[in-house]
Length: 276
Image (cartoon, rainbow, N blue to C red; front, side, top):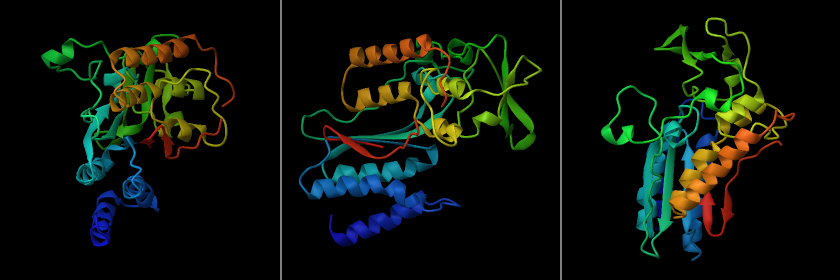
């Protein structure tokens, strides 16, 4: 791509990524493409690129995909539903997976293993495993219910509710504001350990530093990450299932949480891969 084209693409992507109150985040969303194109120009392209963000970034990932295809990649994008991969919450995230086309194996998305959390299912969806409920991973006395901090249907007075035998609402940095307890009497809050477990972290994951709730809410659920990376790296179902089983075993066997390691999320390169 020539310089003029690069500038036009960056301007277009900036418009796609920009949202009210952006506060400079647009530039961060655009960085992975800059790194990828610089690597291509240096004749040291990444073998695999994996990006994950909130759903509003999907148009940006789609634009990234079109650009990456021009420089030798196969790329796929989609909004994934976390409960369809065994995470005990309904979380939607936009994902891009790109593979350098040098071995004939194009990029593919992870295959859903669990049912979506909704009433009407397709025939294919009924053959999957049941979604994982909060009560399957938390040690709280059952039954219990969760009352969301957010309003339902645009009415702030009507708070959403979920039972212990359902997946949690999306875990955000404000999860500590949700109320949880016996049905009709939710009188407590999720601990950091419980919030982490709803993200599929072990109960004793050592969260530390300031604003642990935000750390937990910003993280990609490890079990979802296993599915995405297994698809991106072509590890196969056996390796994927072994990694998921290990994560579930660790989660189930972990004791009470320790005091909450400050966690910083950055771009990293591992064996020719770029993951954000």
